[in-house]
Length: 638
Image 1 (cartoon, one colour):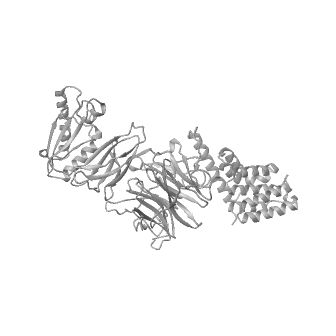
Image 2 (cartoon, one colour):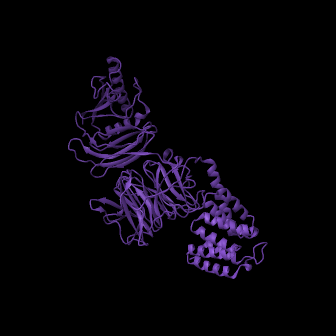
Image 3 (cartoon, rainbow, N blue to C red):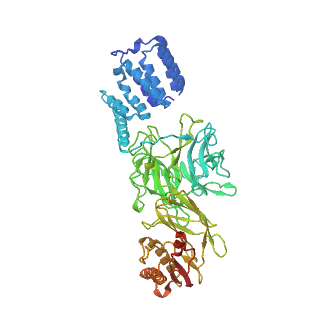
């Protein structure tokens, strides 16, 4: 069926007055008119390339045929050949500028398609000077005028000097003659999963393994996940163990499209499970995105309590494994337009999504919102041209490095339909570069894996930024946005907690940590180092960053009301031995004083300073001295 914009163009031509200052349609040669009629029939059959070839013959027969140039421009526009459209609009304008006035609107749209927003604004402003414009045309012109002004304002307020938007086709290992779209990848980018439209109607999932930056030939996902139904709009968990996706018109569905989950097993992906009534409704749910700790599920829905067409919601995973009732992200994110394709980055702080309601370039644009204090989402920022265009943008995902983005497009080098591409994000719209820690929690005595809670806390704000539960065998993965210092805690009833700190505020290298965590059963003489207790050099006042660890210790003592402990302080060998003994004792005492201030009975606590007498590393190196400066917890009795 012929495109609406082209149909409008054709209707305008057929309704044109018979007499113009320069151009007179009735004077066009018979041969050119016949070719023109044939071209319009081709356009109605969506054969725009054929229509253009026929119109080129028409203007050869009569080079003053303005209508042929205008229709050729419309067909080039449908093919997103903006320069071809611009050239032909300008040829028509050169024949008769008055006749051309009504076509300044589509002319402006193609100028904007090439990023020539200043010229586009001039053209649409000329269009709005036309007398007796109908209401629909005036609103269309005013909408475009607003978009072009936004584009110019954005360019003036964002310094994009030196940035080149150069999408790279992911190649034949990923792309094929049919459409590929909706990419998603694991935290280490080793698994890349996407949707492929098979036989032009059935959507299935495909995956490619990546080694040394090279994508292997993709294959259909193994297991019971792909069916003869449409599976799409998927998101793989950062650890590669869950796949949440959209299934439409499934027999057990609650509405037109529901969210489903599949788990990775030894035999491939499990049969899909509907996420249930807490997530799915009689309305449309789609485009899931799982937070890196698997505790928050973002998705789009058209349920009745939204602000407009499609809104973004979040549901939280409860301790029993069920999902909470979804919460609308509110009017900062959602508008009266459509918001969709949310993607929460591995930093767990940056949310990317599409919107037709926030100011933009004319279609569905891509935006980013950052999570602020108290978990409040900040005002979304448009990603700008040329990532956003006058067309509708789709899903975008970003690797843990914070700069490598993936998206689908039908660019000139597409293998067919939509292909998957990668490009580098501008610095100002990047999420935090994210490292990760993975490993296994196990019993120090039996070596058996232990399901446990893992928590990541920002030491500067003392707020928990991520919480997760290991799997049943104790395996875990947790992400670490760079640029901050973190406390890392692991808890399980009946065991002393594990703590580690990651001082990443000055960390420059790209590093992935692999830490297997032995938990010490609570028993007499068991001991752990409290790695997130901090003091200034030669001081014994607790630094504010210590509160996170101290409160964990308070909770341990409350959970085990008969437990008695001793806090031991240690120093390196710098300074006098007697002064080190005193310093270490005062530091240990500071810890017990904090505990008693939180309601812990002093009779359950003791402290001792050992100074430099019990080193655990060589004092000859800065690293060794740092290990020797420590605060320990020792179990006296249960």
